[in-house]
Length: 299
Ligand code: KIV
Image (cartoon, rainbow, N blue to C red; front, top):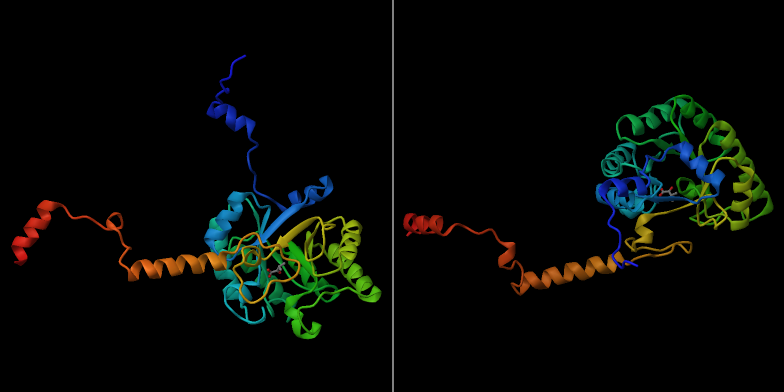
């Protein structure tokens, strides 16, 4: 028996590996039907979007969490449409395959249906997004219908909806009483009926999220909502340990990039101070003949 591993030709490799296709809202639905968990992360810039896309993520959300984890605000309320478009453009330059979802910021869809449709359209027309997300239940049905009617896929968002932080009395779990849970089930069904292709369930009891996921034919994406959702999303800066202020209970930290950045910056500072950086290899060289010519000119 030969111990030499067979060498695959490029052609054989390309037929052996399934070609990666752009993820669509239809693919989201098919994943739910097949019982395959949908993966989603946030991104706000080109390099993060590129790395997530290359890692094989199904969907990237340009979340308005941008306001807190990148821009340093205390809540998501100050985030504007222009902030979102600017960061969404960077993300769409980095990601080729993931379904790209732009998060509609506070007051971009609440004042009127017409404004909601126009602002949703900007995410697709100017920023290269494939869909939009907005927060709220029964009070958003009209806006969802109008945006979907304009040909723009909409993701809903129920439970802890950070744009309503002042109404909710803080960033706290939702749907913990039977009546609040019933209202969330009803809202989820109304959003599905209005045309949402998927719904984020944030910080709701796992049993409730599972019940909603079973009742809906569109996929649910959970954040702090247990394993019974059809997919999961995390804020990337939480997962990477890049957000210094707090880490929600439901986050699993996969890295400590804040500490790693501090370590690298301290090392750089000390290298510059000790003249260990730049070393010879980091400098541009000048041809000896040109150097001699310069010497003659100057001295
Ligand atoms: O803004 C955001 O990042 C979000 C996720 C937490 C779902 O809405």
